[in-house]
Image (cartoon, rainbow, N blue to C red):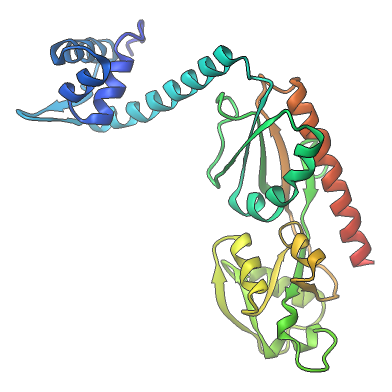
Amino acid sequence: MKPLRSLSGLIDFDCAARWGSFKLAASELHKTPAAVSLQVRHLEESVGFPLFVRHPRHITLTAKGQELAIVVARMLADLRTKVGALQRGDEEAVLRISTTHSFAIKWLVPRMHRFTKQYPELDIRIDSNDSPVDLEADSTDVAVRYGPVRDGDPTVLFREQLVPVYSPELLEPGQAELTLADLPKYRLLVEKSPENWLLLLNENKALEAKYDFSRGYSHWGVLVQAAVAGQGVALVPYGIACQDIQTGALRQIACKSAAFGSGYRFLVNPQKENMTKVLHFRDWIVAEMDEMRRTLQARSA
């Protein structure tokens, strides 16, 4: 395997990959097409494999060229972000948070005004993305990720609990609340599969009735919104539904909870874990999670 001994040509390669043309890349870089082509040729010699297929009137990336182009584009974006931050001196003034779509929309964004009220000097950037996050990338300071959690993990913020919820619009005239006994009358909304519903019904010895699991959703946040819209009774993570429960848009059915092994973890870019902005956000989100935990315990008592 040939080691990459020089980064020369990476910018030319990135530009040519984006444009699919040495001529257009040359225009952006204020070079001649021959100069860009030569830089890319040197890079190909350095890495030991072709990056482009050269046609008479255009160029196309090879399979390996496509893979390298993705990595180079991300690397250059991180580099430009870092240089820009250093030039502006705003590394401590911008907090970059990565989290999932559902958590961002249903939990984080509705609460961020409380954090910004405490730290108005911080510029908040929220990236909601369900894909794995690269904590080594300069574009991320902290991440809140949803998934399996284990006892004793210091990164765990909150272990989720699934709760059945419904819109008050489902109540019939004179009806005060829904109970588990009412569930056969309604669609039971699920996230991907009815497995969690079956676990909860079994925990409450209510499996014998016939249930309608006819609507499924790919994200918890969408599932909660379907419940708010009165499309049925949903089994959802308390953290995603708690805002709507507190405002009265959703009501919670009283019952025993079933075992659930997922929750939220707080992850930090290892190069930034001691920065003041990160410490402030960690303290704030831990306090918010503790308050939510107390609310859940009070409702479950």
